[in-house]
Image (cartoon, rainbow, N blue to C red; front, side, top):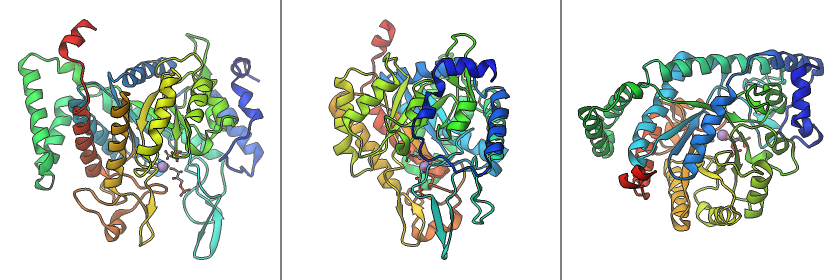
Length: 461
Ligand SMILES: O=C[C@H](O)[C@H](O)COP(=O)(O)O
Ligand SMILES: C=C(OP(=O)(O)O)C(=O)O
Ligand SMILES: [Mn+2]
C-alpha cells in the first residue's frame, strides 16, 4: 500500500467498500482490473483541488442568485470522438450559450462541461436485444464498446486507463481553447450575430442586437476586453465507476483533505443515490463540489437526508441538487422538495436537468426528446422557484456542438422522419448546436424576468 492509499483510508475514503454499489460492471478479469487501478493511483491528477474550491465558491454564488450555472455536454462521451473539431464545436456552443445567458441573467455564468470524463453510463437494463440477439448493455466507453458484438460488450479494465488519457487530452484542449484567445467575448458574440442573422432564427435577432449594443457600449466606456479574452471552464461527470473515482482521489497538499481529482464537479445519478449505497458513502468523503440528481420519486425527506449526509457543515456551494422531474411533474413534485430543503435551513444550489425526465421512443424507434417539453420543464423550474421566492441556480443539459438530429422540434422542426438524418448518440439524445443556442435565448428571456440586484445594491456589496 502506498502512503497516499494509507492517508486516504485514514480519511475514511474506503468506507464505501462496505456498501452496496449499484450499476458497476462485471469485470471478468480481476487481475486486469487491479492492474488498471494500480496504474491510475500513480498518474498525475487531472484537476487541482484549488480549482474545485474556486468552483465551489461560484456554485455558492449561483445558489444565492449572484451567478447562473450552465452545465452541458454529451450524455456519453466517446473516445473516438475526442477530436479537435468536436471538442471545439462543443466549447464554442457552450461559450455562445453563456454569452446569451449572461445578458439575460446580468450575472456571471458558471460554465461546466459534461466533458473530459463523462464516460460511464448507468443503464435501465443489463442486457440489450437486437433482432433476437441478446448481449450485455453498453455501459460507456470506460467499460465496453457500443459495437453490437459479444467481444465488444465484454467489460475491459484497460478502458479505465484509456478514459484517463482521453480525459487528459480533452482537458488540455479545453484549457487551450478557453485561455488562448478562442473564447474572446467579441469573437463569441460575432458567432451569435451570425446565428441570429439567419432568417430562420430572426426571433432572436432583437436580443442579439441588444447584446451588440451592450458590447459596443462597454467598448466605448473603456471596458477591459483583455480580461474577457479568457474564460473559466470546469469539467464534470457522473461519479459512477467507483474503482475509477477512488483511484483518482488524492490528498490535497494544502489542506490534507481528499479530493476526487478526475474532474472539478462530480455528481451522483438518479439510479445510485441511495442513502445507504456506496456512491453516497464515497461522495461524502471527498471535498469537491458535488451534485445529486433528483427524479420525480424523490421526497423532501430524501433531499434533506442527502443534504445532511453530504454537506453536514452546510458549506455553500458544496451541494447541488439537479432536478430532473419531467415537464409534466416538475410543477407538482419540485415545490415540496425545494420547500423541505429551505425549511431545513440547508444550503443547496438548484439546477434543472430538463432532459432526463422527458425521454420517449419515437414511432420510428428512436430514443428522443422534444424541444418544447425541454423548454417547458425549464419554465416549470423557474415558476416553482419564483413562487417560493427561492433561486433557480442553473441548467444542466445534454448537448453537442454538431448538427445532429436527435431531439425533435426546435425552429428546424426536426420530426420523427428527420431523426434518421444524423442520429449519432450512443445513449441519450442531445440538443444540436442550433437547438442549444435557441434554448439559451429562451432561458435568457426567463432570466431577464428574475429580480436583479440594482446597481446601487452592487455598490453596497
Ligand atoms: O443517461 C442516462 C442514462 O444512462 C440513460 O438515460 C439510461 O438509458 P437506458 O434506459 O437506455 O438504459
Ligand atoms: C444518467 C444520467 O442522468 P440521471 O441519473 O438523471 O438519469 C445522465 O445525466 O446522463
Ligand atoms: Mn443521459
